[in-house]
Image 1: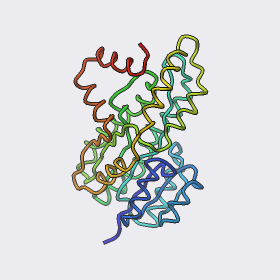
Image 2: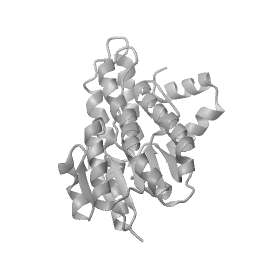
Image 3: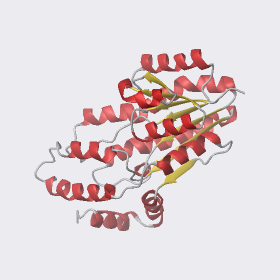
Amino acid sequence: MSKKVVLITGASSGFGKFTALELIKKGYVVYGAARRIEHMKELETTGGFAIKMDVTSDESVEAGVQQIIKEQGQIDALVNNAGFGSYGFVETTNIDHMKRMFEVNVWGTVRVSQYVLPHMRKQGKGSIVNLSSIVGKVSTAFLGFYAASKHAVEALSDAMRQEVGRFGINVSIIEPGAFSTGFDGVVLDELKLIKAGEAYQPILDSFIPYFKKMYENAPTPEPVVKAIISAIEKSKPKTRYSVGVDAKGGIMMKGMLGDRTFDNIMLGQMKMK
């Protein structure tokens, strides 16, 4: 029996990188895809394969998928991890900048899935794991655009799961809370460059300390990696894996409380009231 072949997008850092390294240890054939192939040396030295892939390009994605099929003859699991977070106020944020985020987070997930699914259907089996977030269920001030992209991933995943289940293909969603992956550092650098305007600057000034505190004691990413691997390995995985105390608590609180009460709690925590 051949080893299972896994394609992980956004494997140069964060959850993608950690998942790739763990799967290699477990004996999987792992292809890590990213635009910055030079950042995947560790993946290669541990036995994985690094391929250059831009999930916003049809040509790039098609070439990467065809390379795997040519070399391995199959793709058993796809982890759609490529993405990034970009924050801002609805009124003042540059729309073109946010379109780039949607192109990666949403259309990138769709694009890679579209090129992989025909091979999974031919095999009669496969697993697709889409990385969402707690904000795929719970949106707050300043996170509207990022949350909207993850809400879209959730909706597309639900539709995909219903469409491809008959072909023996599982689709699962991972909804992490705050974890220590370096994500916070990237966001904080971006926050410093935001021109919020006179009306919104006080809110931005309140949000930054809240964001820093949220990640101060953030756990290491092992629980998220474990959830991704569980979604790949189980014959009937969960449709959703909410990972982290903040993710589970936030989603539960949103479901139990009315919108106004939830708004007041969140604005109080962020000191925006």
